[in-house]
Length: 58
Ligand SMILES: [Zn+2]
Image (cartoon, rainbow, N blue to C red; front, side):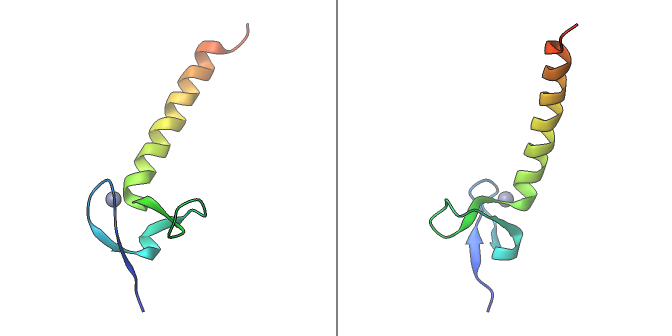
């Protein structure tokens, strides 16, 4: 029994296995699918590294 969920970002209906678990969400899954979340995490990690470089103590 596959449950489908509509991704808030790309608007596609995907199986729940395409979503990360999130206990804070009403249905127990993230609003955005893994495909939509992954690039965001990478981008944030990259930006964090850049910031760390700027703010690193001498
Ligand atoms: Zn998506």
